Each structure stands twice: as structure tokens, then as C-alpha cells.
Image 1 (cartoon, rainbow, N blue to C red):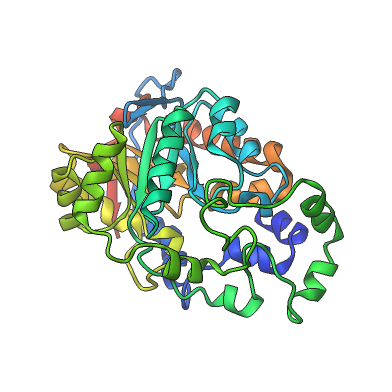
Image 2 (image 1 turned 90 degrees about the horizontal axis):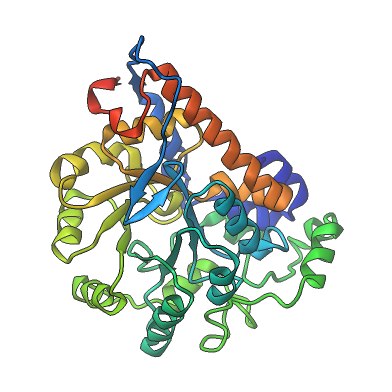
Length: 371
């Protein structure tokens, strides 16, 4: 899927998906960390019937992986969030929609009936913040996830080299790449005007004025955001509430104290603080500290069914990821995302049988050995 995406997208668009911060050490580590942990399978466990369903933040999911919210999806395929939403619904899992989404919350709410998460960026414009919460309520979204690790933009050097912006802007360096992908250009210009659907009425940047994602985070988001703001947002939302981007035990404890239902242990796909720990590396110690008080989601680095099993055995309630479906979206739209989710589901089922477990709750720390 990654190779197909690379063939079909202009360089700046592909590298926005594929790249990360600084030397991309954390990005690579997010997946490599699973290789430092081995599964110890059991046998003769009677695994003809497998139940991989989980309940996360009150939402019943048919598989223990959901589609983490990601921005700008119509840059990767003209169907954008619509394609991912329908694919997630087919597999009975949750779909996360970003504040920087390119389809309205209202449309997604009308399109699917399966669980929906709205990912919230805390902007300086409090009127915008209030409007986004209200629109998510009106669209009957099930979960609100406040992203807490984007207090400023990460140093995404690939984006600096390629000149990536939203909306895309032609530069001397990128002109040849855009010209070499005419099918992308036709789809982009004929599929309707590109916009950040929930932001365009408040902020021109990103919809009508080109800006890099790093610049957007640094200039538009509220760097004074604190725990009191998070607690107030939870109360304003009034439903299942999650903090996305928690990495430390101390912050996990604070999240539980303010009444969050879950935390997504995440480093934003390695796109923010390079040199930070991988989510999987942190799951066990966070679970030991607060696993009985708050639900833990391992977000990032997931490429295989065995990765999911390891994260769940370490103490996560579920897993989520972005690139795992973004490459597929760029490669083939909704059928691509369905193929990626289908592959992952088949791997989880097969790996559960080979590990000797018939339901997710059978996974435990005794089945893991760290090297």
C-alpha cells in the first residue's frame, strides 16, 4: 500500500504521510519497539471460535483496532474521510475525524452509524472551540479526543524540503512532481473545492491561504492550554472523553484525576518530539500505574496483527493508527482501506489462534518477554 501511495501521489503529498520530525528516529522506533518483545504462545486451548471484540470508551468495536484521526484526507484521495468512514463501518470499528478534516462532521454523522471520534485541537479562538464541540454534538459523535502533544509544530524536515502546505502550493522544487502525477491533479481539482470544513468560517489558513502544518500548530493553537482547560472541555463535552498524546505515567495519572475516560498513548506518529519513547514501550508502566482507573489505547507504529496482540497483552485496551490506513486510502480509496483493515483483522484472528487465546481478555503480561 505504501509503494502504491508513493506511485500515485505527488512527492510533497506522499512525504507528508510518510515523514516525521527531525531524524525520524521516533517514527522508526514506533514499529521497531515491537521487535524487542516476544510472544510466548500457549497450545491446546480450543481456539476454533475467536472473539476479538472490545468495548472502548463505551463503544463496542468488532476488532481491537480503530482508525486514528488524521488531517487533510482529501489530499490523498478525492473521497477522503468518506472512504475511511465507510470502510471503518464495514469492519465495525471506530473512525476518528480530525479538526483538520476535509469533510464536515455533519456529513460523516449522516454517513455512518458506527462509533465516531472527533479529535479536537484547542485553538486560540475560543468561539471556534465552542463551535466545534457543538457541531460534534449535533452530528452525534460518540467520543471527543483532545490532542495534547501539538503545543507547537514539530520540526518536520521532509515537509520543509518538499514545500508541503495546505492547500498545496506549487514551488520550483515541487512543480516536476506535481506535473508527473496528472491523475492526482485532475482528481484534486474536479472533486470540489478543498477546505478544512470545520475551520474555514473562522480561519483562512489551511483552506484559502497556504500554510504548513507546523506553522498552523505554532500560530493557531493555544500554547497556554493546561490541565484546567482539559477538565473544562471534558465537562463541556459531557460524553466519553479522551486525551491523545499522553506518554508519561504522571500525565496518565492526571488524566484519570480530571475524569478522562481514556488516554491514547501516542507521540503523534513521531511527528512532534523526535527522540521520545514509542507508545508500545510505555504501555506496561502506564498500565501498571493507572490501568484500573482509565482505559489505555496504544496509538502508533501498528503494522501487524502481532503488534496488536503485544500491545493488548502489555495492558492496552485497544490500538489505533493513522498510516496503517492512509497509505491504503492513497493507494485505492475505500477499497484500499477495506483491504488494509481486512488484512489486519485476518492477522489478528490467525495470531490469536496461534497464541492460544480465543478472546482479547485472555491476553496478559505472562505471554510477553522483553529482550
